[in-house]
Length: 59
Image (cartoon, rainbow, N blue to C red; front, side, top):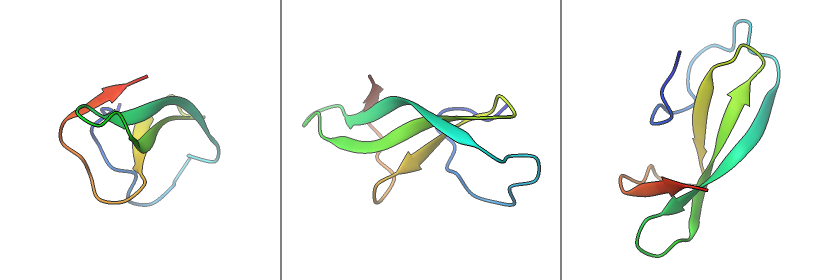
């Protein structure tokens, strides 16, 4: 299973559908920097708006 910190990269394989389950916010500014998605396979991955952010919270 992929961790929430993993980027959404690579071949889709069995992954066909993903649903957003949480927003990823910059810890300091609280601005949305991405979304946490759950794939139909059960894997969870972050889709970043731009560059990956290190200090984040999930809401």
